[in-house]
Image 1 (cartoon, rainbow, N blue to C red):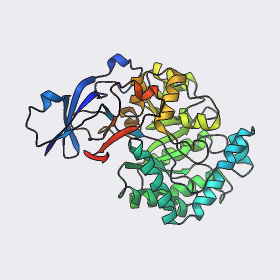
Image 2 (image 1 turned 90 degrees about the horizontal axis):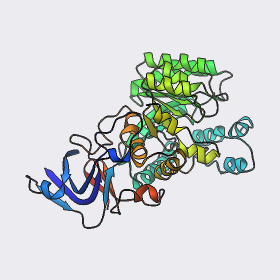
Image 3 (image 1 turned 90 degrees about the vertical axis):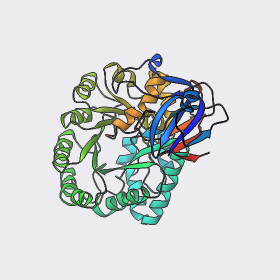
Image 4 (image 1 turned 30 degrees about the horizontal axis):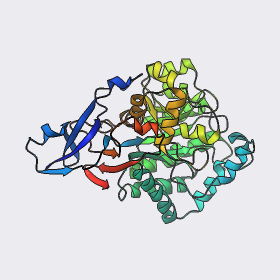
Length: 408
């Protein structure tokens, strides 16, 4: 059955824009008084509403108010499967203590590990479901969720099983990633021993139960060194996992690892060097920047402008987590990043739609075009520029997932 939805004051399709490099706003395709035809879960056609309604249509869903239509947002980096709070960390940072100092004192991630290990499956499921639904209300129709707060075979499997079962009941599509290598487990005396246990014990079980096809590692002074990460990721790649890397958040090194293993993405990049940006470009590694972490930690943003001008594919993610990025509001973070890094509307929206999809190895979403998933949302305005102008305060009123309206 073909359903025509519209008219919309403007449709921003995100079609015909490169995956790489800078984008000017005059490259945007803007369909005035537009409509969109959906067939089952996919987009059949977009165009002018009056033209589309003359075609063979089974049903018309009339839109009465002023709306701008965009693809559903995609958040390619989150840590929302966790228990507990890290409010104490935040207050400690306000007092002048750094993320690394808090970690060395026994706080930081280890507090979340204790809470997540102690949480029952149902408790963790309920907490994560609530966060997924909140993300969905804000227009995120696809999101990645990492493990990484278990740091043991049993607890990492619990997290990934929560994500797996959630994927069967929530509206957004969830992409699970194994981040067991988030930091050295307190159960092990060395990083090498812990990484060996992940390779020998955990990853085979994940593969067997199809809990994740992606592996991540945090490359940093207080986590894993570049050479350790390189060996670990090389082994994971032999097991047919796709790779992503927490890279260059506080010190450089991780982005070079990501380039050498040809990871799908390198995420964070606050401290990336120009030569390493070139390496990402040369190896087709998506540069995923996380403005939420910069806001949460009070550190500089990743050099998004330099990354784009170097010809990279730039994705933007929320990094929603209990420690460094508790806000979790992707649109607000992207809007603020655009101000400080001088990103155009087109660059910002590309970073949270089809370029974010590329960071998850997805090509079927993030663009309003024939054959793409019918994931889209409408903002109550007649001018698309209002969306970033309000810096996240303007939220979508209407959301469709797989062609079905989920927010009215």
